[in-house]
Every structure is written in structure tokens, then in C-alpha cells.
Image 1 (cartoon, one colour):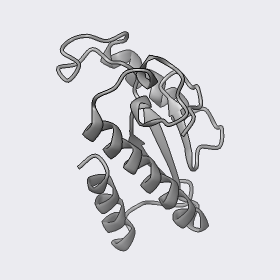
Image 2: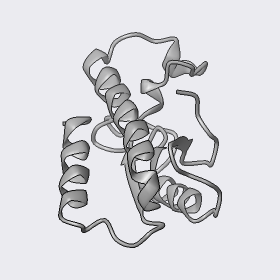
Image 3: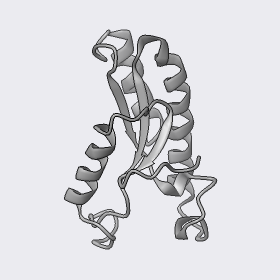
Image 4: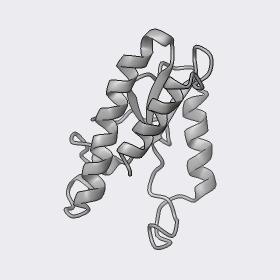
Length: 128
């Protein structure tokens, strides 16, 4: 569901003409754990095979959607929310939900080109 769910939803929104006017955004939430070029702690630990690979698949889908929807001026961006204190992380994490959301909104509202790119909640562009 990490990969195909967002793809099928986007596909149906396109078919139904519901993605909105030019300049609309498709935002997919991914993870730094999906990055092949990441050199942080998440790249030197193993495990999480299904999660990592499903998020990497989402990244590839998002990149293809970015190319396919660009002629309609619909932009697709990937966001990594950070290591957030949630039930999924067992209450561990470096930031809370509010900080993650505020950061991601700041990226989306930054005015910089977003299409086909991968950003962390703190605005850092991440490697694929």
C-alpha cells in the first residue's frame, strides 16, 4: 500500500479530472530509509526490507508521475517527515508531529521548484 495505493488514487483523480488547476501538487510521504544515496544513520542499519523497498517503489512512481503530469502543470513531490514521535516509532523520534507538519508545509509553500524532487521536512533536498 505504500506504493500502489498513492499511485492508484492519483491515477483515478487524473482520470476523473479532479486534480485541480495548473500548479496543483501531488504530495507523497516517503522516508529517508528509501534513499539509495543517503549517508546518515538510516543507510548504515539493515532491516525494514518491505518498508524500505515499498517506499523506494513510491519514489520511482512519483518520479514517473512528475514527468507524465508536468505537461498539465501538475507537480509531484516527495516529502520525508523526519523521525517523528508516533505510535509507529514506539514514541521514539527526534521531532513531534507538529514540527514535522510545519516543516513540510514550509517546503510546499517555499516557492521553489518541487516537481520530481525529494525533500526532508527541514527543507533539505534528499538523494534518491
